[in-house]
Image (cartoon, rainbow, N blue to C red):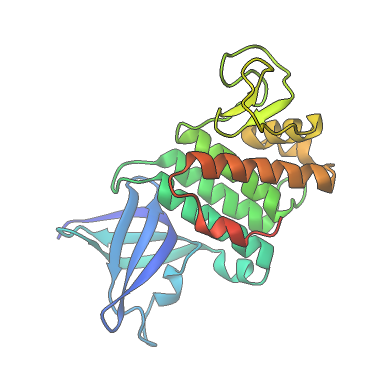
Length: 246
């Protein structure tokens, strides 16, 4: 079978037979890939621990008819152990890998931007930003907004999402796709604080410097709006999002 090498983040695993696992991963060059890792559930496996969720790996794969096969694995970063020791970070990581799994629907279709976003988000979740650590919920919100934007669901926090009227606007509608003017505002729209919309704008573009001094009430409101936006636009929502402490 022909082989190829790639880098990947492990999204999830499933048992196969008595000793194997099916590994679902998001790769740098080949998009989402499912591959069989033979014998990884045996105690003597050479690379079983390297193929756990949240692992960033360099691996060699062999192409099969339906599934690919893992031949070699080298660890780049093992984020699982660090995340397991921090419940808020672990639940945020769970949402991230579930989001990547759902947004990259077709297998073997390049998804380089989604791969880079996931790798970067996991690194920030564990190590913090160059401006210092950020709460896990804030890192998650930034990842969700940016990954949704790459997938074609970019929210707007300045101009009206319905008619494009220049902002600022004071109402927010997940169904409309962001802030809305007083003429387009649907019933039961949210009316967030200006500071909340500013925070969401910064998280969408990855401006971590602008998020260094945010009040807890603003962060909670931003997280609520992000969750509402994602659940509205993503089919069937995210099951793991209910586990996140906000």
